[in-house]
Length: 195
View 1 (cartoon, helix red, strand yellow):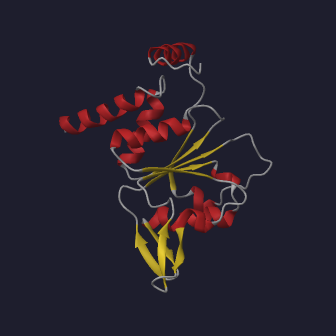
View 2 (cartoon, one colour):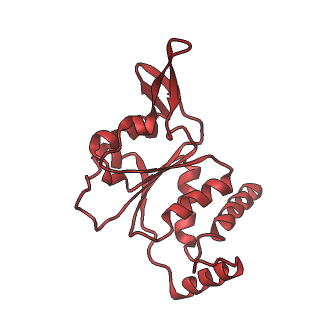
């Protein structure tokens, strides 16, 4: 048990290097990942949602992919599609970004319901069915989806079936003044010239 706690603390410690001052949020995300659940983050732009997802992926040694959800995104852009091979005169499957361990569905509510629903089977059954063929997803498979709570124009509400597949709904929130200073100090140490 102590070994398991140390491993969890080490993972959170790694993520904490990138996401400063959000220990409660990091612990909730870690618990959700341990429970094999999916996460919906509802918050404003610029609050380290993408950084947090990528940092957890790196700390866990998992594959990470990000999909920017837009009104013109199609289900095949998420799941993949069959491509015709002229040399062999057959179709081969080209995997979409859903074939990863941690998938960031960025601004999920910007895509229409048909596109959002492409995630339903994957989130519930950890598999994808296309053209009658079912493909298992590599475990762990975690969806971290984001949406901006104040933008309504050009967005589509998440259907209940989609919301039901998220184990938690969290808000990152703005950092405290002390956390902002710590972020600036850590960036200064990295000699980042874009500040």
